[in-house]
Amino acid sequence: MQVSDHDWQAPGTVPAAPRATDAPPPASGDAPASAYPPPAGPGGWTPPPKPGLLPLRPLGFGTLLWAPFRTLRHNPAATFGSGLVVQLVSVVATAAVFVPFLAVTFSRLENATAADTDAILSGTVGGFLLLMLVPVAISVVAGAFLQGVMVVEVASGTLGDKLGFGALWRRAASRIWPLIGWTLLLAAALLAAVALVFLIVLVAASFDPVSLLVGIGIAVVLGLGLLVLGAWLGVKLSLVPSVIVLEHAGIRTAVGRSWRLTDGFYWRTFGTLLLVGFVLNAAANIVVQPVSLVGTILATIIDPTGTGAALPILIGTTVVTMILSLLIGAITAVVQAALVAVITIDLRMRKEGLDLELQRHVELRDAGRPVGDPFRAPDVPATAPA
Image: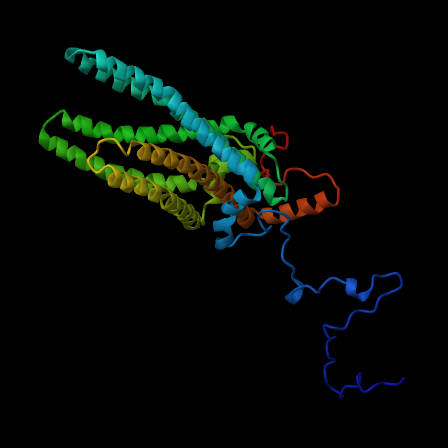
């Protein structure tokens, strides 16, 4: 056998590895050498697939932080449209309730005598507080529904699907009642905490000034304690809406799941929620406040004596500010709801191996084999309502 100079090596040396430019010889019927896939990374490792919105692996902090914003960009018509509809419903409901009420109240005050004014004002305050329940209830329902919509969008987007506006709403509607129940429980807990603080002040005020000061001090300390407790519980239970929708779980089961998933990841979850909330709030102020400030400055320059000549400018500035607030409110609501869903999926990847289940789901789906719901928790029956 003849050995060429190129193939010869000194005795005792390790054979050289094939050069990257050397293509494997094609066998009979195989594809040409240029069709071979590139070699895997070091050690044969290849990155997990990313069929859609999120990579199918535990997320780094940067990916976790910006994934909610990518959700908005991934399907803007359905996501931003849903947020805008929710904001519009809340605004229209509030206006429909309070504009007629205030119009009637001002009309009565114009025709009332001095003796009747106090009675009308007292009735107005009571009626205002009662009517507040209507827009608050509508906002609760709309906010809960938006949470469900965004959870469905993040979950379907992670698997590479892109649902339309109607499909998102139909899927979210199936879990709307548990979401509303959970939102009402949160509202009731917040109302009870505020009522407790005010009750202490009112009881102390019924005695003497010294007792009032003591009661105010106790209320302040208690309020700070409740604020810290609320922040802690808020993070521990922040995943409940996502669990209700993704895992088709009831409220009690979702509370336990959220509590366990955040164990060991409290500060990471808290920091992500806080940082995204700060970014959204800062962006809203940067956009809205300059418009309001410019309108005020122009009105002062045009009408420094307050004769009413700058009224059109003030009205126009108010309208523009309200529109910007509406649009930014829609974006904020969408991003914050999506963030909770992203955090839930990330923690399930880290603690329960959901990334492996999602990879298996994608492989089976692409192979045309029947697949189930990869997001359903193992302890939730498969016969639960969709």
